[in-house]
Structures are given as C-alpha cells and as structure tokens.
Length: 82
Image (cartoon, rainbow, N blue to C red):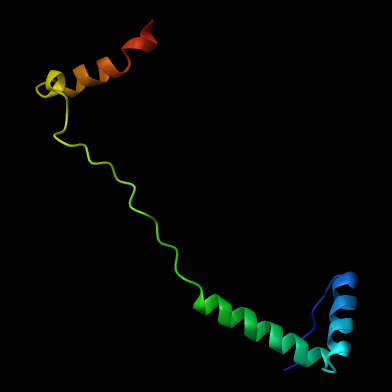
C-alpha cells in the first residue's frame, strides 16, 4: 500500500543518510523502524501502581472513638477558625 507522510527536512536528511550508509532503501528503513517500535510497545511492561495504602492500626485515637463526624470535623478545622 502506498501512503504519503510529511517529515521535517532535518529528520528526512538524517534518515536518508542512515539508509544510504547501510545500503537500504527508505522503504526498508521505515518498515524496520515501525516494526521495532510496535514490537517494543507490545513488550513494554504494563504500569502497576504500587500499594501506598495506609494501615491505620486500631483506627481513631481514644479521644475520637466515640465522637460523631461533626466533632471530628470540628477538631480537624479548629485551627483554621482562628
């Protein structure tokens, strides 16, 4: 299949020089490059988010174990009111 691509002049010049130095055609160079990048993409490891969860231990401190959410919230924001 034929297709047209636009490349920056400097990149095209580098590619032509590279292909000529290895005695390959631009078509072969582009095919090799595409195959390489597509293979690398398939083989790259999947992103895995590390477990950064926090172990709260026994939960709330003694002072807040029987407190309502409003009391806990008020204690959190107590210094901001000043």
